[in-house]
Image (cartoon, rainbow, N blue to C red; front, side, top):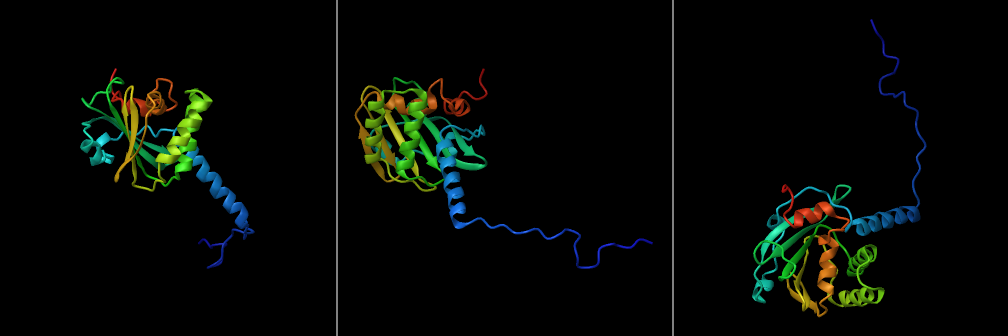
Length: 212
């Protein structure tokens, strides 16, 4: 017969000393994790396609302002298993043409302050070499005056009218507009430019996934 060498109720594993991080260390770790999520949000795509209209829709006020759009494509942006937002592209015919009005929506899965959103946007422009430093600063200042903090479930929609202006909306209505013809292409270019650091997301937005 066999006999257990471990008495009932006991364990062979020696007790390990417990180490508890100080509140300061825990705080630093939390802030570092939040910064990583927000800075990487615009640069890492999950590559898991999702139908554009399934996760988000256009704020009704956009149609009330005289715009008619159909979904072109969309995708989720995720980081280390955390969903950041769903992005969707919209065009009058359901096909993207840069010379036509375009709508772009971000349906947020996480909370962000408007300062963080503007900082991420500035970083994306700087990395892509979009505009001059003076232009990027002017655009950032305008965005700070237009955008709001976002919470999980909120939507931020942009309507770009080529050669004229870009309007920003949330679910409640018009947030503001930037009357600079260069701003709209610069904003959309974060996701749609051929040199974007989010090529999988770009392909989904433009409806190119699964096409040759």
